[in-house]
Image 1: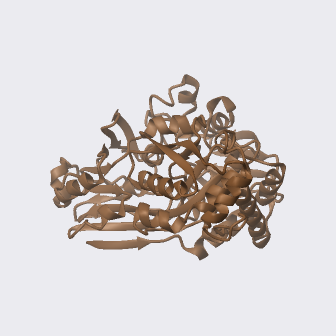
Image 2 (image 1 turned 90 degrees about the horizontal axis):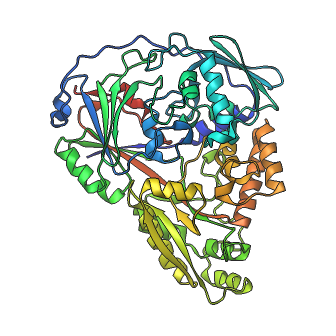
Image 3 (image 1 turned 30 degrees about the vertical axis):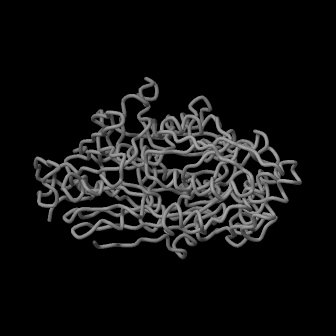
Amino acid sequence: MRVRQRFVLVPALLALAMAAACGPPPQGTDRAGEQQGTEASTGAPGAGATEAAGGTLVLARSGDIDNLDPHLATAFQTIEALELVYDSLFELDPELNVQPGLASQWEYNDDGTVLTLTLQEGVVFHDGDPFDSADVKASIERILDEATGAVVRTNLLSIEQVRTPDAQTVVLELSEPDATLPAAFTSVNTAMMSDVAIEAGTVGTEPNGTGPFVFEDWTQGQSLTLAAYDEYWGEGPLVDGVEIRVVPDESSILAGLRADEFHLGVLGDPAVVEQAGEGLTVERTLELGYFPFFLNSEREPLDEKLVRQAMACAVDRQQVVDAAVFGEGQPTGPFVIPAYASDVFAGLPCDGTDPEMAKQLLAEAGQGDGFTIETIVITGENNAAINVAQSLQAQLAAIGVNLELVPLETNVYVDRWLEADFDSALSQNGASIDPHLTYAKYFTSTGNFHNVAKYSSERLDELFAQGKATTEPEQRKEIYDEISRLLLEASPWVWLYTGYKYHVLQDGVTGFVPLPTGSLKSLREVRLGS
């Protein structure tokens, strides 16, 4: 077994954070390249590493997608699949630097209140319609429309007007300087869609993007089939298609890789990964996401801050990491981005794990006899969430807090999570390359996920606004340190750890580059065979 490790580099992220904070990023360059042809082959799964360039790449993972609308996607497996079908205005490179996407160039005016985008030429949707500024305008306005329920609406609220002087130019007029927009537009949650599809209301039922692969078929709980798009504007794709198979048991994924049934497996259980063996390559990537214990602070007794603090102080995060992912993770506070990394306990009444103090806090809150709450737990991607749940259940029982665990399939869990239909919840959560984009949607009074987080304050609103507008990196770091402290003091969630994602590849699969975001976009440049 060959193991390649990829990490988020602190200098690279610090430079990125500074670029995002210090005003306009440099203009992008046109990255549209000449289409590379490939020789077709049968691509039968059993052909494995011996087949020629072309073929169908078969990817296995334990969780299925849960919808077809990228503006509404929250589950990791949905986001990562739809990134192959849709494009965004900007992209991230492996070092998490913002790069041109559908926007080939961009420029702010002197005071940062106008962002002008120049679009790639020759881009065509999968249905044959050309991509132009009207599609950008329609896509942004759809995201900003509250009725859509778009996941990242909060991140675009500085956009007051979208003007389209010509087919290749988009002018965003802003209510205030906002240097986070290029980073915000790297997400598939801001995917560019056809204005015709938006008008027709077919976005969630008939996927029609500009990405390297065309949606063909989705059999829920079994597989998603994508075909190469011959008119793709960028580089690739170099395979005839991608088939994503849902295999609930990760050990079965590994067995399928050994048997040449799959070319690539997405795994989350390090105990399974350790068994990969010869003939397989493991890409081990430190994730940008994090694992929190969501608490619903509108439900008794979690509406008492002392109760939430008690739970935060009772949890040994390293014990969670050891039990859930065999030590393959790092305890964390709210911010996992190295340039803004949070202290795990700064803001809590305890300086470290302290069950005795936790019991005192519960007693002060009138909960000295303990209580029971329901905890919904996501399943279907890997065993980490269940392992975390069982570790927390054992630790919190020691202070009289009993967790009733309710495992749920991804689609059911996401529905309940979005409705805040839980006492507490456990699943991994995604983070952005910018701290404002990570948490403003949760912990500001206007955030579109405020209903899930159930916590904000005037002070947090002020600090998030300052962080968004501040251009001096050191001042920005101070602002987000204060936000971290206030979040830990309030403890609407218990922040646990950040971990790793593993991609296991057969020999002969080349060109795959994992990102800390979990993105599978490099599948457009993957080859099968030597």
